[in-house]
Length: 88
Image (cartoon, rainbow, N blue to C red; front, side, top):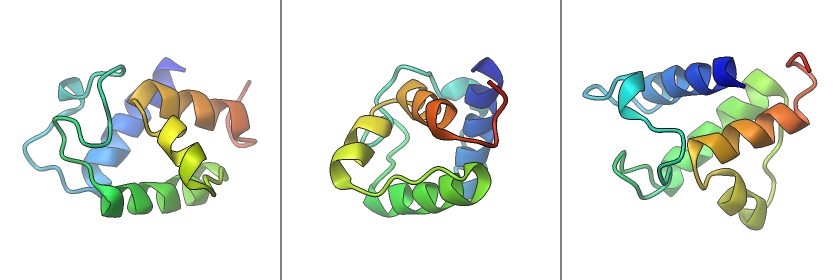
């Protein structure tokens, strides 16, 4: 799980072009959407596409998205629990 958390931090920074952010600036349990990273609904859409492409995991409803994108940890837990590409 720790490897996935670190990987997601790097991917989010690169995907959203967060030039003044490094992985250590993203805390696993901080609010992800609307938090200090200023991630908005367009950013979430980009992340949903990346998650589906890179991990084979779909987030196909608003309700699921709200739960999955609450924090980086909840996102990683959702991906880890639903990906066939990750080792168990």
